[in-house]
Image (cartoon, rainbow, N blue to C red; front, side, top):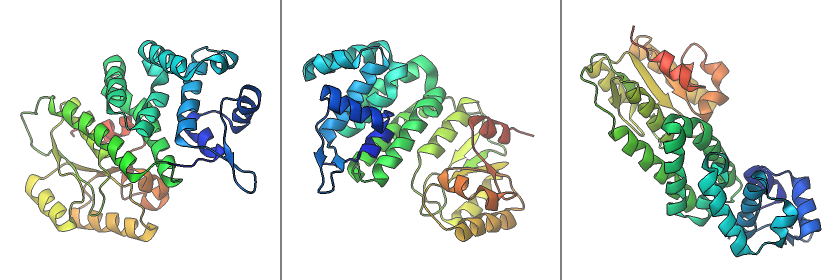
Length: 291
């Protein structure tokens, strides 16, 4: 069972630590343990309870009323809110699905979001903030590797299946080539880039995870892409990532490269002139236009 500090709860629920303490003292909503130095610690059950409280409170249920409700009444009310306000309550529901490893809750929430606002908005407005929270949870040890893989695989499946339903472009002359560099396995962002481009009717060649550098150069020589698209999440030092793109620029004759991911953001100053950073979907669309 995971152990959370009050700052973890603040990050995961969006509720200020000060407010959490007031709710504990005034309404007894949580019963944290304390370390020898009197630091509050919380378990999975209390995180789930607070996520439910946050969701109901966001939708107008007073804390005093929630405090009077049984766990079963709270659960029932949460499902009512879910069905009525899926777009507004999605973050809390997705985190609950992660903590409980509840595939049905996750898929139903995601499907309803896609039906209401489309996959592009679902990813940019809902899944990216959710994935940011997953990153925080994993770093502080609040979720296991199994939980992270569970939820990432569900997202991966959804993006792939939705992309697979799109028509294949008739012409593949000078396509867009998508790849992840060797030892990079975090594929979700690249899969989403692929969906966006295919959804716009653009010709793409998707080479996926951990592509050896020599294989990348061979593919470029064979298919003659007009632009490369990649993503970089795995931690590397500044010199390594800069040298990678300098070498790529030299070996490909200044072929344009669009790149996203946290490592690209971290080293954006050093990578200036080597890549164009994908800091929004508009950049991806604009940077892959046919000349």
